[in-house]
Length: 595
Image (cartoon, rainbow, N blue to C red; front, side):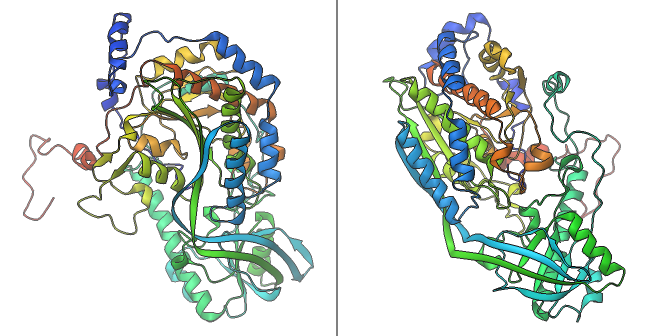
C-alpha cells in the first residue's frame, strides 16, 4: 500500500445516492433489455443475481485442495526479493510474472510501459558500527536512492535536532567530515496489546455504517491543512539541512526509523518514503548527494542520548548501493483469459495488485500477497477450464509505492485522461491533491466492467468496500451470502484509500478494494524489514484467492455490466463546494477588494 496515498479520497460523494436507486423486482425485464445497450452500467440492474453455486463449489475445491499460492509467494519473495520500481529485481519480477502467467495458461502475457520513472537503484550492502565510546554493531539500511560511501568511512557524530529553520544556524561550520543524526529521537512505547489481530464482528458491523467526514485525512478540513503544512515544513527544513551538509562536506546522514501502528515500530526498520531525504528522490534532479541510511530507533536513540550528554561518539559505516540508470521506465505485467461470448467478449473484468515493494524486507505482504492472490485466482479459473463470457484480465502494477504510477499510467493509456485545470496548482501542492480539468474517455472506458484489488497484507477477505457505489451493494450482498462460512460478511459503502483501485475510481470506473483482517500489517510488516515470506498466512491467502476468483467469474457472466457511479466532473469541484453567496440574511456587503 502506498504510504503517500493513504489519505487520498476519490469518491463522487453524495451525488451517487440520488442517481443510483436500488431497482425493484419489477425492473428485472427492463434491466435485461438495458443490458444490451452500451451504457447499461448507468441503467437499472436485475434485482436478483443469477448465482451458479456449482461453480462456487468447483472454485472452492480447486482453491483449497490444489492451491499454488504459496509457491507463487516463495518464488516472488524469496526467489526475487525486494522489488523497488526501476531496480533490477523489479525487472526480474515483471519477467517472472509474465512467464509464469503464460505457464499457467493465460494468453497475451506481456509488459506495458507506463513511462519514465527515474533512477534505477539497488542496495548491495549496508552496515554501521559504533567505534567509541563502546564498540557495538548497529542496525541500519540504506535509504532508497542513497549514493554509496565508496567504502567504509569513519567520523564523529553530530546530532541535529532541528524543529525550526532557525535551528540550523547553530550547526553551521560543524558538519565537515561528520556523520549526522538528522531527526528527533522518539519514545518506544510499551506494547500492552497484541500487535496481531483480526476484525471483530462489532468492527465489521461498524464498517457497514456511514462514515462521517473530517479529520486529518480529509482534504479541505482544518486538520488536514495543518497535517499537510507540517509535512511541507519538515521537507523544507530537510532540504536546507542537506544543502548545509553538502556544502560543508558531511560523510553520511542517519535518520530514525518511524513508528508502526499501535507503537509496533520497535526493534525493526521502516524504510519507505518517510526515510527519503527529498521528495521524488528517484528523479535525477532531486537526487540526494550524501549517503544516507535509516536506523532502528533503539540504536538511534542511544547515539542521540550520548551526544546530548556531551559524550563524543565515533561511527564507522559502509553504504554500498548501485545505480543502474537515470531514466528507467516502469512496467506493468498484463495477461488475460479471453472472453468467448460474441456480444460480451470485448468487455473486460480486471484483477490486480502492485508488484513493486520497498527494500528493507522482501515485499511479501506489501504487496506480494495481493499479486500472488490475483495470480492464483486466474490460475483457479484457468485450471477449471472456464470459458468466461467477458475477458478476464490480470494486471500487476509497479510504481504504486511512489504514487500509484503503474495503475494511473495504465488507466491514462487505456481509459481516460484529465485536462489541465484552468488555474494551475502551485508546485508545492502534492500530486494527489492537485485539481483536475475535465475527463476525456476512450472507447475502452465503455467496455471495462470492474476492477478488483487486494493490497492490505496477508489477512483473509472479510468483505468489500463499494467506494460509495450505492447501486453495487445489493449485487455484492447476494454474491457473498454463500461465503459466510469463510468469514466474508461485510459490504461497506465507504471509500478506502492507498491502493490501485483509486486509479480506476478516479475516472468513473468500478474499482474495488477488499476488506482484509489487519493481522500485523500496520504494526509490523508494512514497509519494514519484517515484510518477509514468514509473515504470509497460507490459509488466508487461499481463502482470498477463492473469493477473488468467484468475484471475477460472477462479473464475467452477468448479462448487465456492473453499475457505475455518476460520471466524474473534477473541474466542477470547487464550484460545487463553494459557499452559497449571501447566505446570511443580515450580512453587510463585502468591502471593495475583500472576498
